[in-house]
Length: 116
Length: 112
Image 1 (cartoon, rainbow over the protein chains, first blue to last red):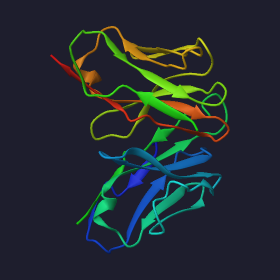
Image 2: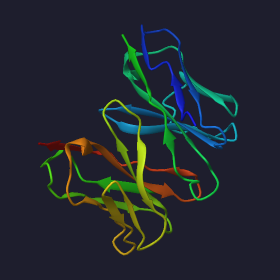
Image 3: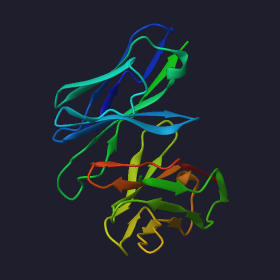
Image 4: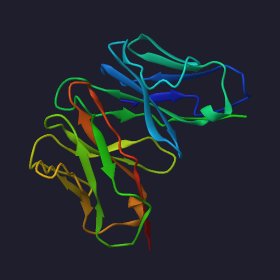
């Protein structure tokens, strides 16, 4: 398996612009997670999905952030409008949800977002 | 609510030294416990896990034992290598929610 795929790997944008981050989970995994990592706040869970349905979005910082999962093989995290404090590395992870590895999370390589 | 505390870093060790990274947690019931590792410029990857009391998880020379009495899951390695330099995260399961709580991470630097 190719693992979790994220795109783009790096994104530089200006304040006020819309940013869309993309994720393809591992095939057959039922759960998908979006995290944000910064030096100041560490690793934060933003939102997670089960079978394409959002389960918990309490970590989404504000209305500027939105996430969708239109099908089992694709998810997006959108920031509109972006602000400099959104600069971080954003990770997508997926989890089987069943079997002996049901809690194990597999992370993508991350998208490094810089908002100037 | 569920929480996890792991020792502050950075931890700097010489090659072949013994490593311990402490982790304690609060949780409902007896959650599965995980250690994840993050190498520079990469995403996190699972290092080892334990699913019930007294279980010992092990991988790549690292070990951690599920201690129910002390709600701890300390990570150990007998002889570290330069290639072990990374950030290590303790992560107990959040029971009933199909997610984990990640600790703040402990940066390990191993010098030759």
